[in-house]
Length: 398
Image 1 (cartoon, rainbow, N blue to C red):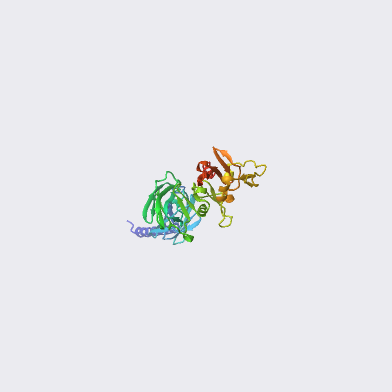
Image 2: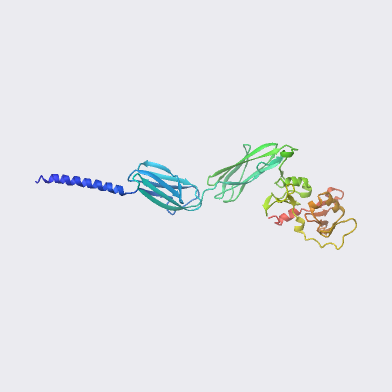
């Protein structure tokens, strides 16, 4: 046996080990960090709600840092370090509906960098329930008595599952859940209220478990309150509708129930005006007019009735003639016109006295007078037709 070969084998074996080590070092120096398991999966469409972006980062050398951008904008992810060479990055956000790109770059301590991009589609964030139409309105001042406390809730993404109101910390009302996404659910309760301060707390939860709250306050003032303590709203239980300022002051100062009737709609915006319909009138708020003169009555008579041809000559017999329309006014109708607001309240006559439906009537720009002989000598002898209700029910207000 040739014993001289043994040292040579040892030397060659040692050299082989050294070569393997060197090669391993060279390979490790050439390997960049690796990014694995990106979430959401590339091309995925995610359900509504927050999106969680996750990825694992591995390094042959120790890791130094990561940079994450969503749609080109840098964000700050949470880094979970399992070891110096194994990290998990995580970022959660409510992203808008649509396609998004995640771009992640990992760097190790040798300065080697690995970029990685992927995309996914978001269905949009989950929107909490929304609230609308608090009644009475926040900071309103009501006169003591019956009031309606109500609020509407809805959800764009799903249905409202539970909805409840509390008044000054005590349970007040619950609502039946809505039938479909976007449909409003209203919680409402009538209550007789004494003077004092009231706070309503609302809680609504949708079918996805998202909860939202809303709070508002109002005041009930003592009877006879004036000035800055005077009521700014009144609830009409007959129709379940509130009248707010400045319409409330106008209603009170211009004949109230007898002339204007009950409210039959809430106030609303239309054509740049705030409108509210009553049985016998339509109130219009014209913001371009001076303060104190902004409430004007709609020309309901003119909207419902064409004027009759004008008279060929002014009549006699003590009748008042209006050359603007060529018609006259006399007798009980003239007395009523003069004593209940005249031109500003009723406008000019559009006809003479005519018979319609068995009644003697006369049309004006803003009203229709009816004569009721069975009530002669009483305030009901002359009454106003409910033109507001007629026109509203014909769709004139919508």
